[in-house]
Length: 321
Ligand code: UDP
Image (cartoon, rainbow, N blue to C red; front, side):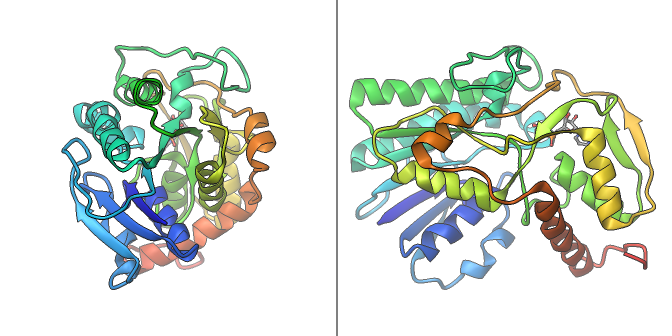
């Protein structure tokens, strides 16, 4: 089959391209490199099944030949990035999703949107099932991402109802692993890089807020299963249901890296959700999917990745690490 992957040069997008190619499919990767990096696709240079198009998803996209599926991941996804590019983020969710849905409609292709746990905002229901409508601030600094993805979901449903597009919506929860950028700004990459460099680990707020972290190979597996499944359009949660506080995460990373770094507390960003944990009953039932990689194992692999990355860049890490 032939798939279009938007956000192909991003962290999850590049892993998804690898997986689809490994499964024997052809992939057209699309990215405008606002937050993605060609370094994530370097290893695919010259791969016969892979073709890259440098383009913003908000522009009409013409693809010659057949397209069997579109997987639309393109969007800044780290709070640090979407705070810096709010309009572009809202555009990726709204105008970008519309353009990519048009592409899917023209080719009669199945369309998967990576929506987000941010649709639940600062949730008042715990853990979050797909039936929960969320508690989202429409005018805050995170709204560009939250509302952008919520409007993307609405567009999906209306293209399905009005134009018969075959849709799949997955709401993805915090995901981590190799190929996160050193300066990505999200908590796991921040803490690992800080620990390896012997810098203070910056815990925002009191560190009692929770997240549930899914290793990237598990996330990609869930997305592929959703794309292949018949009879379910979503929304469907994909994430690891094991919840931990940010302070626990910081301590775990300190102990795994054997770092002498200290923890410092900084102010909590506006609208930072207090708790987040997916209810994955639907994914278990319909996709027979649940995460396989524990946080312990995933952190070890990710720490190894960042050690290599820092070495490559000539960034110093204390000698005992
Ligand atoms: N966080 C932190 N220190 C950091 C980066 C993030 O304490 O250096 C916190 C952040 O305030 C949030 C959680 O870690 O409560 C997860 O943040 P992240 O940016 O990874 O993703 P989010 O789940 O907020 O989208």
